[in-house]
Each structure stands twice: as structure tokens, then as C-alpha cells.
Image (cartoon, rainbow, N blue to C red; front, side, top):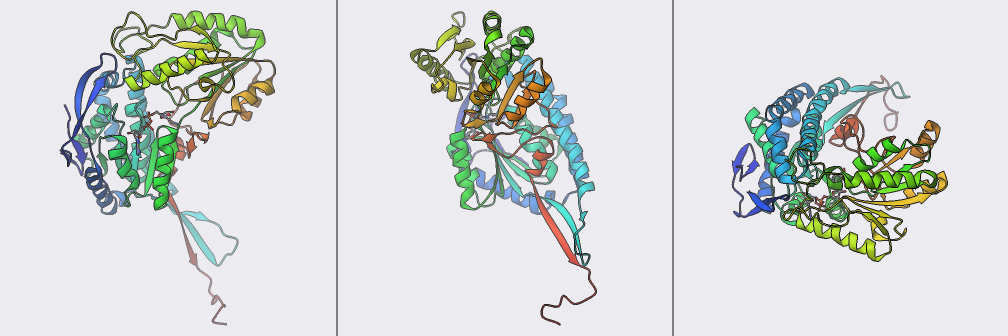
Length: 490
Ligand code: NAD
């Protein structure tokens, strides 16, 4: 059991000695006591990261860093199954999904190892200028110390999306995982320790949002803040960053639409709609939580959708065959139930679900739920629920579907399903979102950019864009002309 912080290559107790309890959301039992880091711990961690950046890691080659990232991936791979089991106990998700997450996290470290190597070959790229008397080369240098704050829905994967590109770029890191799911991030620090990653390159401070995340976002020695979480916290991070003009990237919430046209295949549509809203208990920033279905196919599609939803198996994530685990916490359960009550009161028609499953007397479980025709201004149509709750609306024409999909303050993702490739492409282009899926919903690859428009965030993670988040671009321009410049010395 790990009940210490990882700072400067050592396991240390929190400065003020406080701890908080981590629960298994399926049993509501305490599974571990974890340090509640505070301002003092954050300060030690940031200073360690600063030293490591200035005296070592910041000066390494991409190839050297690639070696470390691969070693970290190997170390995680060696404990892959144990990590997946720990993720289920900490987060509640079904084992098969936890196994995907851990595999994806390992893949993410390997991918950024490749990009770190490639970065060496992109250094000192020559830029041809229109004036031959000047020679210009472009350097990409690490941003410095990165403060990274992550949520609870994909605990190790979110850590990988942040830590891997930062280390690949040559930045050093202070990571603050969610207080609800810190356990696999602690294992990531343990893996870094086992491979002998230089002290201070990766520091981990567990703790609560305001007490640990707050000081990290305000620390003057942090150069870059990378945050994934809710819009209100994102706004706080942005104001903290404004105080000393920190570089930021924000991955925030969503209320993404899935548009299904009459010419779609009903069974394929049902499959992707279910996956789009119910995997990970709907606690997915890119969940396609608003279904827009064309009138001609609506009755058949909804009949099959309701039938399939009722067959979803709910239970403890470690039970074989379970597809839907518990929500993350009592707070999240209360929030989802609140949305269900509001939806009923606003006149939306409940097609299925809406209750806590009778057979489970413990754990934060809720049935997968579908509401038909909520009002356009109702909270379930407009706000991010972050739970297994789907809202359906019908449309007649393509323009109407695009209008409804785009009428949101969020712009993270969207999906379209149609047998007509030209129409699918047209609608994909018209959606104001950073991620659009055609004839599917949710598959995510380390190589492709991830992030949103509007209030869904700023910047992109993953792919080359994820690496650029942790790089500063520098021009070095040299005067190679033989003549004097001629402004003063004529
Ligand atoms: P949250 O904003 O409550 O917390 C996220 C993190 O911020 C946690 O580590 C928390 O401790 C920390 N935090 C809280 N208050 C803070 C403060 N004042 N200063 C600094 N840090 C603080 O979000 P959550 O409930 O953990 O996650 C759910 C949200 O995350 C949803 O809105 C979801 O859409 C979003 N999310 C987005 C993406 C994406 O890629 N766009 C991915 C996953 C989750």
C-alpha cells in the first residue's frame, strides 16, 4: 500500500501529515488512505521539478528521453493486469474497459517515445528567409516545469496523456491526480522510481482540489498548466494562470450530439449509440449524450435501443460479463439523480431506466436511462450530466440536425451515421467540435488530436499536438551579410 507522496525521487510523508480515504464505488468500502498534499508539498515538488529541469532533464536529447519512456512503458506492461484490477477497484469501471485503458496508457508512452526520438531530427530546422543576408534556424525547446491536474474517469490513461508528452518534450512534471482515483497514478510514480527515472523529473502529489490543485496552479515556478476536468475548475485554473501568464491547455466538458439519418443501419446505430453514452457509465467527456434521429427511422431505432439498453448488465466491475459499473461517488450519483428528477418534472418522456437497480443494495449504481424529447432549453438537453443518461430528439432535415447539434456552449465531439458518405462528410464538416466520428462514436487513438472548441477547452492533446503543448518554439536568426547593416554606420 502506498501512502506517501513521490517528490524528488523519494517517497515522503505529507508536510502537514493529513490523509484522505479512497473508496471502492461498487462496495462503498474504504480501500486505501492517501496523503492530502498541501501548499508546502506542492512547493517541494515544484522546486524539485525546477532543479531537475535546469540541471539535467531539460538538457537531455530526445533519444535519451525516448529510452526512459520505453522503460516506463515496459515497467507498466509488466504489471498490466494488476493495474487494471486496481483501476476497477478505484474507479468502478468494468474490468474489460480498465484493461483497454491500461493498454492504451502503455501505448501512449510508447508513442511519445517515438516522437521524442523524432524531435531530435527536427531540431535546428532551417527556415529560408526572403533576405539572403540572414540565416534562420528553428529550435523546439521544452517548456519547463509542467503542473498537471487530472480527473477521475480514466485515472491512469489521463495521467499518461499528460505525463508522456511532457517528458518526451523534455519538461519536468508535478502531477496531481483526482482525489477520487489516485491509486494507479501512485503506481505510475512507483514505476518511475523502479526504473530509476532521475529525481524530480516526475513528482506526484495526491490531494484535494483547492488544497493541492490550487497551489499547483498558482505556483510561480510552474511554466505550464495542463488541466483536464470540469468547466468551473478550468475557469479557476485559467485565472490562476493569468496572474503570471502561464502557458495553459484545458480539456473540459462536453454535451456531444450523435446524428443518425434514415439511411443508417439500425443495428450498427444501436451498437454505437449504446457505446457512445453508456461505456464508462457515461462518465466520458466526449460521450454522445444527445441523440438526434431522423423521423423515418426513429420508431424502429428507439424500440431496438430501449430493448438493448434493458439488456445491459449492471454490477461490480470485476463480475464477468458486467457492462455498467457504479458511478464514481455519492456526489456524482446525487447529481445524476437530480438531472433525472428535473427531466421528469420538465415533461421529457422516460423511455427506460431512471432508477437505482433494485438488486444492488450497495454502491453508486444507476440504471442506463433514456429520455425522449426533452425541451431544447431543459437542463438535461443543455448540461453535461456525466452519467449514463441519453436524451433523444427527432429531426426532419439535415440543416435542422446540424443546428440542434451546434446549439451548445460545448464543442468537444460529435458523431454522424449515414449510408450516404457525402452527407456524412458534409455534416462532419459542419459540426463545431474538435472531434467528429463518422459511423461510430468514441474510438480514440494516441496519434489523433484530442480537444474541444468553445467551452470544451483550449488546445489539443495527443498526437504531435500533444507534444507541441510542452514545447517552446525559438528562432535563431544570424546575420551573415558581408556589408555593414547601414543604419548608423553608413
Ligand atoms: P473537476 O474539475 O471537479 O476536477 C478535476 C481535477 O481538478 C481534480 O484533480 C480536482 O482535484 C482538481 N481541482 C478541483 N478544484 C480545483 C481547484 N480549485 N484548483 C485546482 N485544481 C482543482 O472535474 P472531475 O469531476 O474530476 O472530472 C469530470 C469533468 O472532467 C467533466 O466535466 C468532464 O467532461 C471533464 N473531462 C474532460 C476530458 C477531456 O478530455 N476534455 C476528459 C475527462 C474528463
